[in-house]
Image (cartoon, rainbow, N blue to C red; front, top):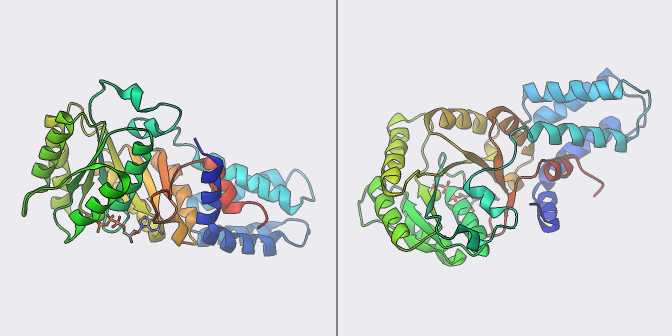
Length: 322
Ligand SMILES: Nc1nc2c(ncn2[C@@H]2O[C@H](COP(=O)(O)OP(=O)(O)OP(=O)(O)O)[C@@H](O)[C@H]2O)c(=O)[nH]1
Ligand SMILES: [Mg+2]
């Protein structure tokens, strides 16, 4: 459910992407002239610069060309409307959010979870994509729903990672578990989930160390964490959330493919959409992975995680006069 506040956050968060794309858009279609091949080629360039990627750029421009070909003169508003609709459709193909994260949508309050046990959400991704911050923001959303939340410090590698998560636990009003010095991540997760079960926790969010998708031993470690989790809580992890950083552009797509192949990712969250003019990267990610993008990160604060909404995204990217 996207609230009016969330729509504003899209507009603010995607400001950099929009200004760069819209600047180009106005100069391409601004003269009220007939639209021909040249303009479409220029639009192609602009979309590629926004990191939409070759495949999707070609598809979008082709589709737009077909629509525009039906009539001679269009206003800039018309073209913008068509482009918004084409993009919203392209990014909506992953379908609706499912699983635990969908609990945050709709009207289901904490009460509806009575007796359902602990749901385990494992958060993975390469270094610095925003995993720990995203856990804090998710915890905040779960807490607002009245759920009991525990954050598990499964990143035992990076100095200060555990303290960073502890701060998010305090901010969001969540329980917190970390291991003793030198403990291995799987054993920390084991203990954290045991505590979660005995403490009637609704959601355990498990932080993990940043790992390069190309480093096999680290990827294997994730499999071990998942196995241990399933031994403590039936069916765990119920969600494996891949966190991708929008500012890394096309590389995010490469990471996504590898993580999808190696661990069973169930949802994608794209962070730092606010820090880039390349917000178009969401289009190939949503279009190609066949997975719903659950949320997008539009800033560093507790409330800067917004449910992904194809229409709001497309409007903020291409959208109205500002
Ligand atoms: N602007 C912006 N910054 C973000 C967003 N999400 C995370 N960040 C920032 O990105 C930086 C890295 O975030 P972390 O949450 O530490 O990333 P991480 O994936 O846990 O990093 P490692 O544990 O080192 O792999 C921090 O400075 C965050 O504040 C976002 O949506 N927008
Ligand atoms: Mg981290």
